[in-house]
Image (tube, rainbow, N blue to C red; front, side, top):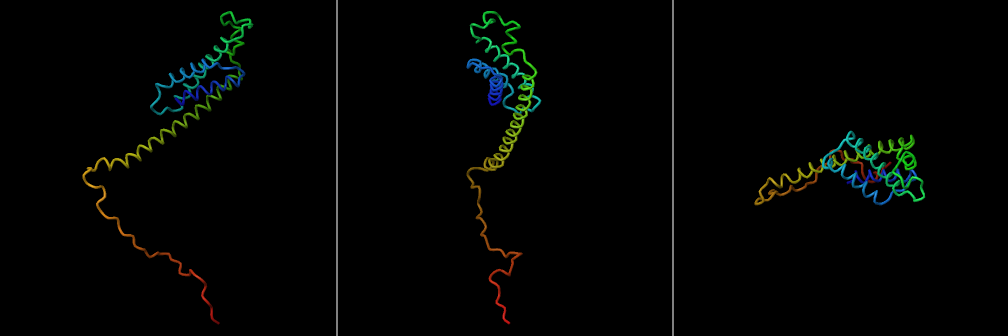
Length: 178
């Protein structure tokens, strides 16, 4: 779910920063598409080699979806509004990307994929460590019978120990008699 929300947020932010608007039905559809694409990969750790192409493909798909939804909501006075999308409509709707848009999408996808891969690795590392800690705590409890108490001996009495490196010059200075 986090992957789908991040993917949607990246697509919407890039589209809005590019000067277009995103209708709410297109956002809902885009979230469904991103969730459906990420759901089969859930439940296990995904490396950068899986996250990067999936994120790049979804960004292309979301860009097309947002551009088509923006073109579908074109004003009635637009010369291409009544026609099917032709080459002029594609150029005006943002479906034909320029070099700046490709560079911006590329940088955003690359940085977001690195961020998601590092977060994924950190999360799974934390879950593995937590599982080991819980196993260390619960395994002795599960292997001992419940009829016998876990601790049958008294704790040892703490005695004061003589310190090895005691500084004996502590206290006020001695009076020197002359």
